[in-house]
Length: 134
Image 1 (cartoon, rainbow, N blue to C red):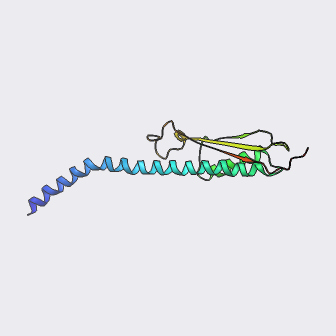
Image 2 (cartoon, rainbow, N blue to C red):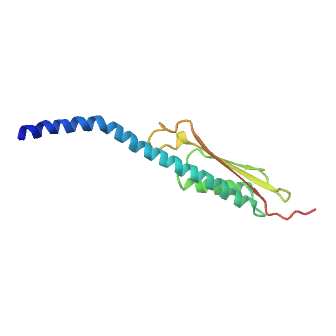
Image 3 (cartoon, helix red, strand yellow):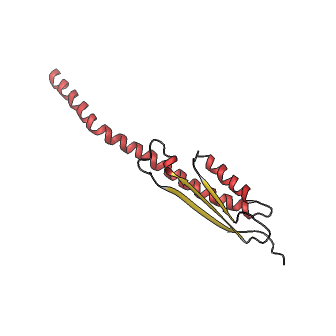
C-alpha cells in the first residue's frame, strides 16, 4: 500500500509539470484581455467626456484634452494621444471631435504577448451648444 502511494505521488508531480505551463498561460491571458477591456472602455469614455467638456460655451481644446488625460490616468494608461478638432474652439464652431488612442504595447500587465502592436482608438463628435450669431 505504501509503495503504491509513493508511485502515485511521482505521477502527480509529472502531471503538474505538464499542465502548469498551460494553466499559467491561460491565467495570464485572462489578465491581459481584462486589461484590454478596461483600456477599451476607458478610451471610449475619455473621448466622449472630453467632447462633452468641449461643447460647452467658453470651453477650450486644452480643457477637453486635460479631461481625457484625467480619465486615462485613472487606469494608468501610458502613451495616450488626445487630439481635439478644431484646435481653437470659437463662437462659430459647430461641432467638436475628440480622438483618443492608447498603444497596448505600453500598457500590458506582464508582456504584450497577446496585444502587441494593437492600439485602442475612439472618437467622439458632438455638436456645440453655442448660439449662432449673425
